[in-house]
Length: 141
Image 1 (cartoon, rainbow, N blue to C red):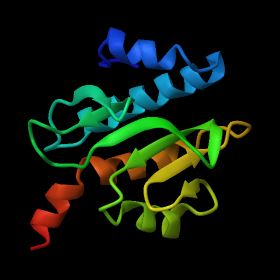
Image 2 (image 1 turned 180 degrees about the vertical axis):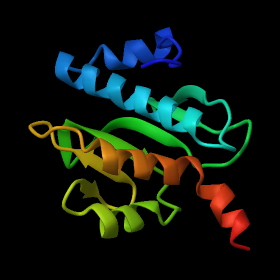
Image 3 (image 1 turned 45 degrees about the horizontal axis):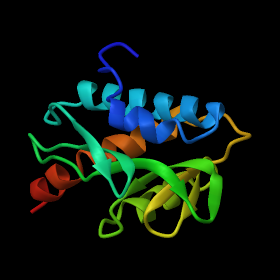
Image 4 (image 1 turned 90 degrees about the vertical axis):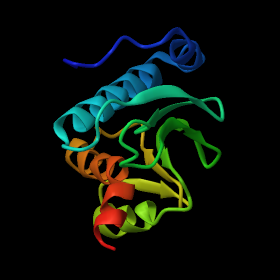
C-alpha cells in the first residue's frame, strides 16, 4: 500500500515462521494499519517494533492510541489475529458492533478466519478506534 514503509528485518523474520497465506494476510493488515493512521488526523507517525514477539504498532509520538499487535492466539493458531490491550474496552465494543463480521478471543483479540475474506470496512473502523483510543478518552473528560 502507498505510504507504507518497508517491513523491518525483525518483523519479516517473525512473519517468515508462518505459512505464505498468513504472511500475506499479516502484510495486508500492516498496510491497513498504516493507511488508517495516515488518514486520521492526530495519529501521526507509527512506531513499529516487536512486543511479546509479535509485530506491534504504537502511536508513540502522538500518544493518541493503544498498541496494536499482529499475531495468533491459542484458540485459533491457524488464523491471523489483531490484538489490543485487554485493559481497554475496545474488543467489547467491536464485539457489539461487528459480531457478524469478526470473531473474537476474550477481551484482547479480533480473529480473522482464514477461509473468509478480510472484512476491510469493519477492520478499518476497529483500527481507527484503536489508533485514537487514548485521544478519544481524553476528549470525553
